[in-house]
Length: 567
Image (cartoon, rainbow, N blue to C red):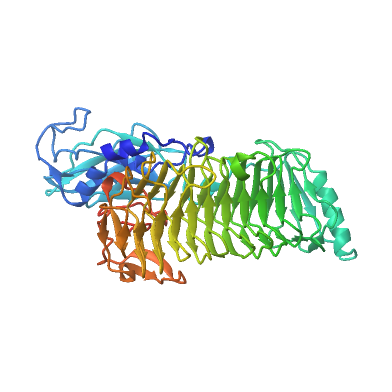
């Protein structure tokens, strides 16, 4: 793992304080796991047998049954724990005993029969601790003594890992607000605007169906707390529409003039106006499950004041105008800054303004998490991020992006880019100096495909902290990998390419083409990037840059495949 440690000696190791519970650094989970143990377990490596006696507490055996296996190690991701150990030569099978309480024994733990390592335990509660011991079972059916206990804190699984810590706080008061069919849409909108302005910490406002037209300035400036957030939500089964009859103002402003804290806006259709949602003095504001579309300018913007801990999840965003960004977070050259924000599980498309990025994080904004978004048919990059000016890096992972009229993904630096699928564009992946210098950029386990140039990395040579490893990079007609200024100091291993490579002397093997995937087309209309069982991606990854999970959230198992998906 020496190469891995060198690569990250220069990279900040935390992606925002908010995400301390998330394993964010490439290979760190496997540095703890010991990929050699996992690979060896699957390859039937074994330790020497022994015999007889009873456990002395350190995992050795002096009793009936074979010795316990050695090398017990645990890794976690997405509500799962991978249990790996070396095979014992005298063992026919193994028993795993696990618990969420310390001091697990064969008598107290949940028993799982394991034919051979490694084994994955799924559906676990994030934030809890997982404790395990393993025994060997001999060919005569005799069970030996257990290993020493190992433990790991379980990484949060499912969608909840992207939600704010206060997402499950219950309201103290629930207010139902219905549309009055005896009033006009504008009169109903005025009533809704007034009602929202009266909300107090702990209130939950449930809004019924109807088109609520608000033509005056609509500014949400409410202050809840972590113990008593304010909820503004669609009633179950209803989709209330908030709109304007013109574009002279934004549809919704949040925190203009006064702060907005611990507020959730969920389940609304928001349309028309200039900018659909513009955020000012905001912290701990959550926009969830909203349909934001057909606005005259950007869809969701936070570029007027410093913001932090904004959460944008499960939204549908499309059909923007003017410059047309779907999400515009932070300001040019770090003025202002957005940090510790989450943009996850959104569907962003048809952002066809004069710029029209899908998600843009500006230079100087830091510690942000862009994950599991589907972004396509954009005018500018599906995802565009600047650097962090030395602050904790941004994390861009598990996104599916295709169909940009520009670069599909453009990343300046100070970021981890992992487990993404990028298809099409003028370049599928592009990186260069922009408002800051390219540096400390780790690009691993991505699938990058284009008819033209696939991946172009300007300004990488001689820069600190540059990693380009375990990526699939396929071009139909031009360069697969292109370093115009060379790649001095870049750690490049385990890549698989189709098409010429320029500026990189080693660190790659040659693939077959799209037959290496389950179902991918050059234009991205088909994008199942799972490696084909007999294709060129199987087992070609470099172990020192292994990631614990793949684009689907499944745990990676040996042999280590190159690209975003594990075969």
